[in-house]
Length: 96
Image (cartoon, rainbow, N blue to C red; front, side, top):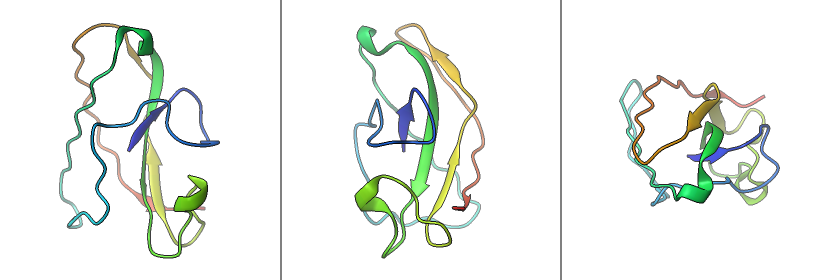
């Protein structure tokens, strides 16, 4: 998961989460929460972009591979202050 100023992604996220899960144990329908800390210079409009890269998928290019990986993005939202909670349900779908 990362935050992007524009999509589709053309490289790494503009803001990375403070951690990365290489082999998460996820269950279908399970809720996953992420917390990201930003600096004042990073305030602006972003979209959360979540990708589940599968073996032999598109991780090396930062772009999900059609028919292999899964992804989803949020609607744009503004980060304008020191504390902000953005709750939205994002459901991963096969990449096209």
